[in-house]
Image 1: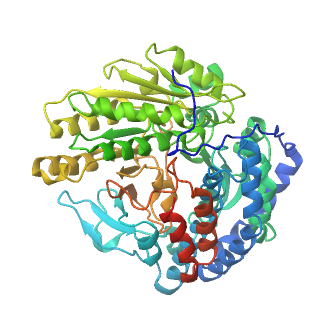
Image 2: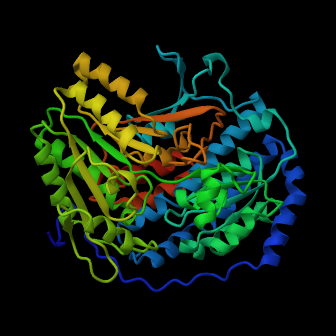
Image 3: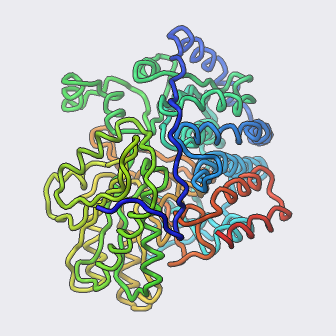
Length: 584
């Protein structure tokens, strides 16, 4: 449809054509054996290290990762074809080193609490809802969160049966075991995923780790080894390379006790049951070929529910950018990218919102489709829908932004509802409803029952709408009833990935026979043992502009400054951060 052109509100610097990035050589079978066996020798010694000593190890990790942060970002920029001075480079700081340092800092706080108090201290109140569910407020965790995430709060809701006076935390520190070897199979789209999953298995689950870097970003492996050097040299971590063959070999290795996967549900099924006809037969017979614990995070057809309300023209522009930013970030290669806009068919501003979305899609420069298989996935989605609308340049390895509007919500086995596009595609469907409260109930039912996955969902609602008691009650029910691991209100749900104090993972209840978005959680820096989901609440319009918004001209500067702050928090670093935030 439209082609890309410059616009004052959007980051317009064009991405350079990237140099071809080759894979690092696969680790040999002998080297894999040596790595696993070496880890197995150290599993008991890792398990015996107390919280206070582990907190000191975190200090060493912060220092060692500090030496690689800039090179880490540079490597990602080269691989994805993003010029170093482009504001888009801020994404790589924020989704990479910044999150590692935030994760390390929060883990260190929890470890110090365990050493002093026996468990991590919960920074906010622990309350019980009328329905009996226990809620722990985890954000803001300190004064820095109040400053950087103004108006944002986050809660972790516990599984039914947990009582407010005894929220279970840090089981691996309260009940010693003999440790174990965990295999982390990393994703290749967001550079912090593998290292953060590794930190979780080490410091929360008490496992030594063999970390297989994904082939899509294995160029980062040597930098991760350097960052994790304090653990590598002590025999608690090994970084290895290769593809499906090496991953499969490690999954079946007798010295590997458990597996964590970030990636595709098909990958988990292949690990658990095998591939091809034999794998299908094993699954049908409920006969897994592996008797090992498998945890996973496997994506989502991420819904974005737009609650109708009295929006102004500037509200429409802001929320359209909120939506488009959630698709455009990382060229659409995020498991939390918006894949299904859910609107009210009778809302008189639905068309205006979609037009604002189209306007932005038409001016956001397209980006290199660097993730393997993107072109095939995009073609599969676009060819299946006559109403698909394409925006922007699609040459030189780039894919156009694509909107599939007016999707029939009653379609059976619909591709947009049952499969994650994992590229530059977003669909929209409109639900009929007599009023806002009825719409909310219908949207929750649609998201829970028709869309694949349970990872994350976003809702946006105008504050005026919440002044209606019926709408407020319906909204509270919607938040409670959504079966998603992260429920975000007014901010894109990806913020749940970045908070670290919150959990990140699927809603509980899936198993290997219907894996959906996976099992288990990561991040969870307060080490809750029985979390159900995380709820994030933000203002309808954030001030200053969030750094991930497509029009933020200072996202690169913010990414660098916020990373430096997380390495060593200091009030003297605040003026530069605030100046960049207010002029973005």
